[in-house]
Amino acid sequence: MNKMDLILGTPGTPNSKYLPLILAPMEDITDPPFRVLCKRLGADVMVSEFISSEGLIRDAVKSLHKLDFSESERPIGIQIFGHDETSLCKAAEVAEKANPDFIDINWGCPVRKIVAKEAGAGILNDIPKMVRITKSVVGAVKLPVTVKTRLGWDDSSRNIVSIAEQLQDVGIAAISIHGRTKAQLYRGVADWTLIGEVKNNKRMFIPVIGNGDIDSPEKAKEMLKYNVDGLMIGRATIGNPWIFKQIKAYLKDGTIIPLPTINERVEICKEHLKNSIEWKGEVTGIAEMRKHYSGYFKGIPDFKPYRIILVTSKEANQLYDTLDEINLKIKSI
Image (cartoon, rainbow, N blue to C red; front, side):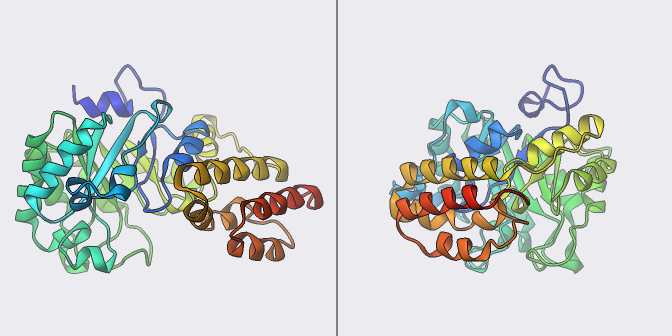
């Protein structure tokens, strides 16, 4: 049995209860404070922010800090990225010492500065190199190694079916596929038909996880037709950690869980802010929380004045006071 089957709890295994929901790795988003919330609110599997292989092997403080996780987050994978074979192998060994449940290689980030170094989705221009490096990383560690990637470089090279086969053949334990090419970035609509082709390829036997445009329980259910082994959810979770709970209930029996009350949103947001400050320090913790406020308070009337304060204030006390005022003055949505 594939080790990832036990981690994911895919159909036919002892942990199989429902299709696993995975929190997608996102830079400056999927840190421990946010992951803990997502886990409590229904996420099944965590993946860290992506970590530079060069940073890990050079003992860079920021990179090493990203190895932190709590036992409550398990199962969790640590995601690494880079372009140099030796560095990635050494980074995987460093990550393994942190004792996660698996190591994930990022072959999908489309950000220009990453792609320019032939890391992330930049490797999709050189599939033989991608396969060679992946094989070396698999051989460097004892933990399962997974890959997150895209459909291909652009519309003329949507070769994910072949890529997935080759990566499976060199030993990866699972593959997560974002339904866009590198050239698309995050534009347009994710194409899940090719993800389905990978899953339904008779040569494939490892878990195939689908990613892209899952932003509601209804959309999650729609993606089940592609027969994937898990659903990975990214941008729709920002400021919205309860989406996992909503999706899980809807997939189980069609139950529609309403959005949290104002009070619930404020309390979750305050917990997130507190933990972010404790983990990253006040300056960085406050700055990185700004990405979440619009999500936490989506749909709330007359929110703009409060949002301006939340995204500009540098004082924790002012932020807490503002959140308390939201709770006091806004009674309904």
